[in-house]
Length: 460
View: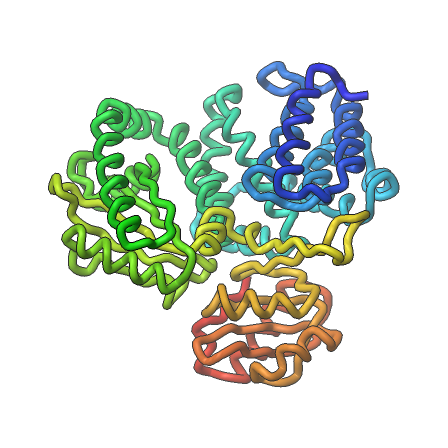
């Protein structure tokens, strides 16, 4: 039976999942909730609320923010049962599936990592380890969702715990979210961390932004109408909206440039979302016709994407009021990747293999260890993520040209796929089971194969 107090929260979760994945295994999702509710029934949060509130909230983030599959939702609901209750890996495996038990155990292992050092190099190594030790990238995604909810409810912790967790978040989880291209979650993690790491600085920025809220809203509305009207005249299908830069972004600029909030160059960013790459460049011309572009402030991340897969055109212009603002122009698909990162690469396929009637999901991941399971992934690599190194455990190719890509998914072994400006390259080398040993071996194989692509190769 569903606990009456939490039935509404659970029903909202189910409604969210149904909205993007109607073929999800709702029977198993409900069973995972009921199992977690029973396992955590005698536990309370620091807020005094029943503990089950937390797994439900994490599952809601996994569904609403990341739109992951049924197994991810179930694992999110169960993510603390092995760590904090009498439930075992064997029990979860038997009641649900070995995959879900492994996901839950993976999250538990990440929870047990001790974050003792604050040295930059060691923090970097820890970030690499977090990713490399995850055989399934969903472990990292669930853990990030777990940390996000804990940060959202950090007011119930002691001041010392608030600072400790905020520092961990700023140094580990926000950078991982950035590497995975999950910008929305990265921004929220940064803002929530800043709130406790420098409460005075955070409050100063937030209060000043709130004081000018109406003035800024009026400005953004005027610019939005101007852009919208011009694009309608040109019959360019589009969505346009403006937003304020988030507090930590402003804080970082103030600190780095030693300026007050009033001296910060651009506080506003507008996004124009269109249907095609051609439309992106057409809109860029329209924006530069409407407003005066600032020299040296144009960046073409479509022609040269960021390592985490981000693509967009960026330009900074001067508005009619003399205020500078940034405009980001991208396609709908680019926008999905910019917002959700690696999670946006999960592709739902009808009639695929999966649990119950659920289709097969595949994912790509910029600069991290992944489990690529079918050749269609190559299309995503080539089209969306150039200049990125991928480790693909379980598959390999002995050749070194794009023609060997298909072969990479048909041979047993370990492989490295390097997508350079000259085309996809594959390297293959058998190693032991250690993921980091494999990472280094794959990189060595790629470098030996073509020196001029080594600059694009990263070992995580």
